[in-house]
Length: 365
Image (tube, rainbow, N blue to C red; front, top):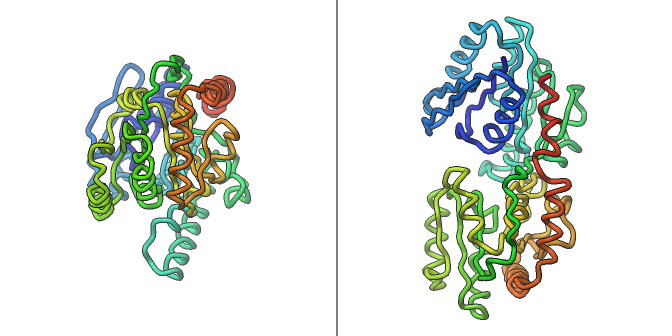
């Protein structure tokens, strides 16, 4: 039996639940799934037992309860964790029983610290050093590291002796939309976290420029605001620019609902600003937009350029004027499917979960 543990993701997280757990269930594996989430949604089914703990539970209490459950289950011999803060769980388990441990690193935590921390430079860097030290001392209890981004593999984890494999967060082939000729309206979507580092302000300003030429443009912002202050800032900017009829904001919805909203749009946009996070982490939304048959607009950051070349409309990062020009280019290309067709080929051949699924499931044989 395999135990899968997450302390900060929703139970129906796309990567953990829909891709990894479903792939293991398809192989006939028995799974016990532990989460600590505000969403008390039980996803148990045949061969899958789900136990959710209250989000407000301390991480130490969560680790203690999960360790007790796993140690009581004699047939659990493989454990996968999804957060750095859960590494002490692997230490506890290794001391009690023979167990195979997998550490799935979703994002580069150093980059996240350097992007989001409001501490001064020296305090922030000391915090990163401590975090890395704590992680390193616990890596001896890890048998296998999974990285979701190729750039991470070329940085700090490359020096560790633990086995590593890159398993990107590609879309499932079933998500591919093939009716690319139906939606020719200039409906634009951004899907993901709503924060300053994602270039949301640049996007609103760019849309203000675009509507002067294309009055039918509609933008949907689908996601959760990172802070209340930033939410107020964006709503104020929309009002000041009189864009209330052009921009709709939708709070994050369950994963299955996301695809329905994506398919109503004709243009997908990744307006990220240049910062440590966006310079190092691959935006999963790129593959979702490719699979949704969108014209795609993106700022020219390394993780995006690693996967696509000429099949999207490029803009300079941190530049609303350049972003508006790229959006206009995408609108003027709505009758030209060549970029969309190239992206569909890439999804079919390279960037879908079926192609890389065996890299994941083979770890548990």
